[in-house]
Length: 117
Length: 115
Image (cartoon, rainbow over all chains, first blue to last red; front, side, top):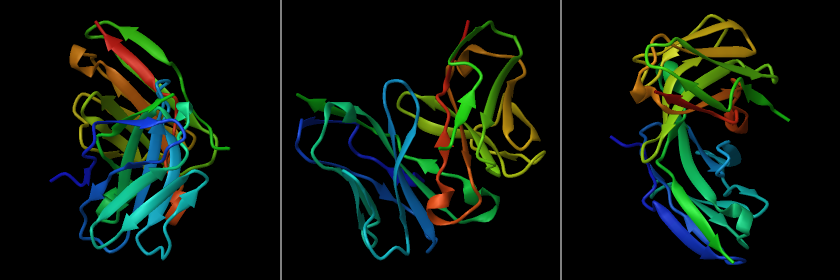
């Protein structure tokens, strides 16, 4: 079963507008972590933001914030004031604790964001 | 800043060749990972290592092996390259901490073409 689901293969946003990238996850473990990465066309994966399952507040990092709704098992990334340099693939990932794989991340298939001038 | 480097950005090999992809990290991280990335499939874990000389199979280990003789270096080996191994290969490392310290940091990737 797919553990991380990103339902938007591609999205467009106008420059300076906010955009939300969806991510839902599936785990039965009460302790888990959620990550968002950005991958520009150059290929390198860039860490953006982290949310722990026990964190009381939604994570924020500059223009990035995570809309964490635990009961719905969703961890949507919100990018405020989009810039042309935000055009990239965005991946949601999860770490949950089980056995020897406790350090592994499971990735979604990604959302391609295009920022329109 | 964490730095993860990979030996090549682009690599072209012939079917049947033995291929070595090298990855080095400078943050004394315990964990290192090799992924392959294909369009529409996202990132899939090939192997990971949580300590020197230790390795664990990921989701798609067939056709690959790994070596970790030193903490900072993790090598991916294609014993006999095949055309279906043409892909983008990404190396990552992470600390064995909790919370944000578990973040995996990635190298720039190697685009491998097997002819």
